[in-house]
Amino acid sequence: EAGVAQSPRYKIIEKRQSVAFWCNPISGHATLYWYQQILGQGPKLLIQFQNNGVVDDSQLPKDRFSAERLKGVDSTLKIQPAKLEDSAVYLCASSPPGQGLYGYTFGSGTRLTVV
Amino acid sequence: GENVEQHPSTLSVQEGDSAVIKCTYSDSASNYFPWYKQELGKRPQLIIDIRSNVGEKKDQRIAVTLNKTAKHFSLHITETQPEDSAVYFCAATSWHATFGTGTRLQVTL
Image (cartoon, rainbow over all chains, first blue to last red; front, top):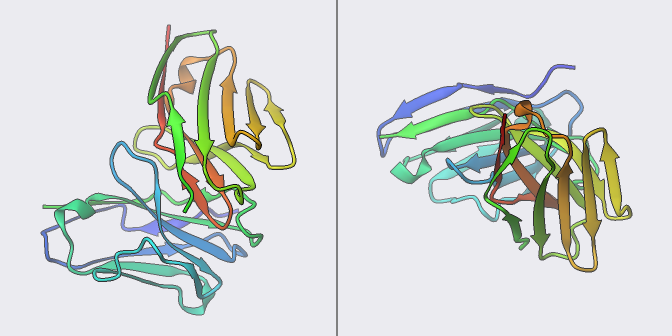
């Protein structure tokens, strides 16, 4: 089966600029997650979608981050404006429906550097 | 929310020795505990998992144990090989996975 697709792989932007990341999950995986992984740390959940609805966005900095999953398939995560501390790898993951009882398949991630 | 602690942060073992990584969690609603391996510059990959109704699970050289009463779970790798060198993350899951801080395992020859 095809894996989780993410693009771009790398992005370098200046602070205060905006950036968008794209994710296409595994076909049939109803649940999609965006995680932020800062160097040397574990992934931290930003937002969880079930189909096209938001399940949990409690840790999403909503003043600058936004995400959508139109039509319940692919998703975009946007940062506007970016700060230096947003430098991280942004990982998209998907899992079958089942309230978190399945392991995730992660995409390759987007490495964001804010200068 | 859930809080997952992971120890040790770094672990160096000789090839052929065993490695043990331990995690504790806080939310009694967590019922699924996966472990991920992340090689440098790559995505985390699921290597083994355990559900709350099971106390132990083994897959070749790796095993996981879970103590729900004490809220801790562990990863055991036996007969370590150089290709086991990576960062390992535990996670506790109810609606979503909360990850530990990671253990950098180095297997030396």
